[in-house]
Amino acid sequence: MSDTSASSGQMSGEQPFELHYFPPDPDLADMVSSFYCARINMPRFDEYERADRPQFRFTTGADGEYVFSDGHSSTVRRANIVGPTSGRVRAISNSPTRIFGFGMLPAGWAALMGSHGEKLTDRAIDAADLFGDWINEVADAILGAANDEARLIIGNNFVRAVLKQTEAPAMWFIRTVDEWLTRSASPQVHDLVEATGMSIRSVERMTKHYYGLSPRMLARKYRAVRAAAALARGETLDEAQLGDAFYDQSHLIREIKRFAGATPGQLGKPTLYTEATTKGRKQLAGKVSPIVSET
Image 1 (cartoon, rainbow, N blue to C red):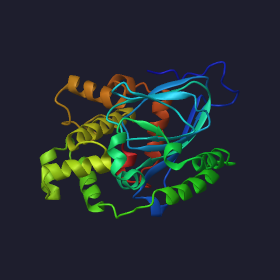
Image 2: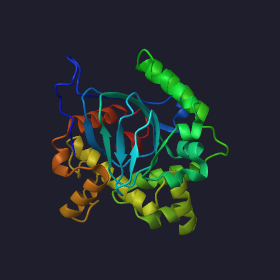
Image 3: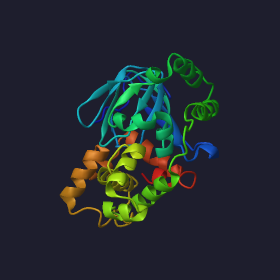
Image 4: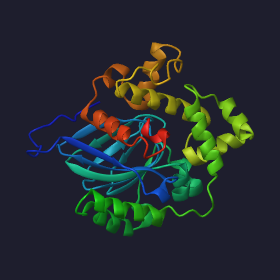
């Protein structure tokens, strides 16, 4: 699904779609994956986003919707909280708009939503429902800032204000899961259970709390988006150490389409959106965790 070509509504001298990523301040590295600024300079944007971690997004044009893999749709608001996703998400904007947002790592998601986090898997809510009218003042300040540098200062301070930990996150568990996801081309749940020394039920409970998904679904998601990112960068799966990750070609196509919204062939001819996200995440290498920059 793609409708990101330039049109008669595009302003002269502007790119149809622009996206820039920025690392968080060092003290927020365990909470935030990255900040980003996007500019949609066309009358309509219609793209599949990959399955992703939770997002907090401010937008100038609340004229669109998110359609999740289970068919549920949510209207885009001025300030949006998008939960962790278990499949591709169709993102639609019916007018030119600007977006400022950040991805939340497991500790940040737990700090924001507490025990309610897993209820927002494959869902989005209006952030005003959680924060009241104050969030619109934050949106005005961020979206009205003079440049991206000013937006980042406000954004980092906003994160410090809202992602307050009522209890210390289980960072040992999060780091164990992240290592499990990156160590193997096809992570197996029994290896995670062994690494944590916990029961399978406890592992499933904590994984859903911090990541919004069961260990098995989390492993499938990470494997697919990791492979999709490698293909979009022009790498082979062998070069990305993912040669044994899928049973056969049909399995590869099915999984990548489910989680990334495109076939391997389509990733080889990326849309403006895919090209921008791939380039942006690659530029984050060395500034954020590989689990962020390599997917």
